[in-house]
Image 1 (tube, rainbow, N blue to C red):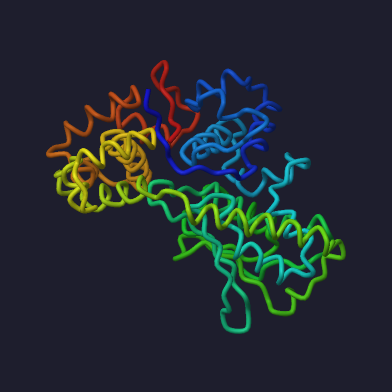
Image 2: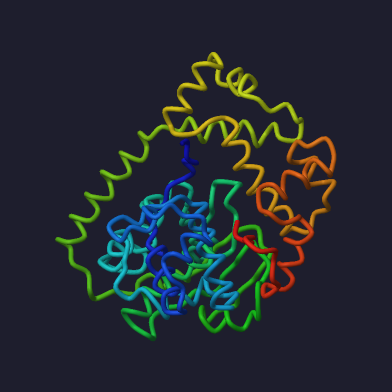
Length: 350
């Protein structure tokens, strides 16, 4: 049976989210069923899962905790024993500036689709975070990753430096005071980027826990991982990009993708099969994720049907119901009231 290869992530919000759900009385079996996981996805010895599965897990956790700002609150309440080695690099850096530089260089090791960028902005420094995959846009992961430097600083010194401003691309999911209290800074939503802004003076903050020997070992490990990441096969991503660009045309078949890649269709079919997927599986996965994303943006059904390559709204509605066991209208209403009961067996996870 072919499986959706998706983009893999090793970010340790996975075990932290599992800890949170367990604390709220959710069993492993319920998590697997609700988030449509393979049991091996949450094997304690290896938390590497697909980015799609991670987003499902975040959404489920928000439903269970009823905390719309769980992205910033999760680390304060759970996961004290879980740290990705990139975070250990941050903790062992000499000062906050070096910490942010290391996030800038090694952030992709959380997930190949995650991008940290450290740049100057006037007299300040700005750490930006983005997800390169258009299929996996959400608000939990940017909030979580921009909260990490603040969380690490607070571990070292509760009175340590805070950002002077924080920006998010998404709408505020709850009271803005929750975000301003956490970051202790102005927080702006519906901005052009996700970013935290720090003064140059604050970047001189010394961690006082830097271990140069350990830092050297960790950075050697990180550099080796970057080399391995750069050499990974990106054929699936290329096919996904081709599908996304051509969705509105409705001309979506493996022949089209093969032409773009200058290879025979049988060659492309074989290579995708070796990667554990197929053109049709990638197409369906893209349509499913974009459908829910567009519905969250309050786009009308006709627009969504066109953007996903359907000739009419009924074709899209039929496909949506076959994928998720509920209609686009039921899904949209569930966003207004997260406690609304969907049809039996349905899930509002993405």
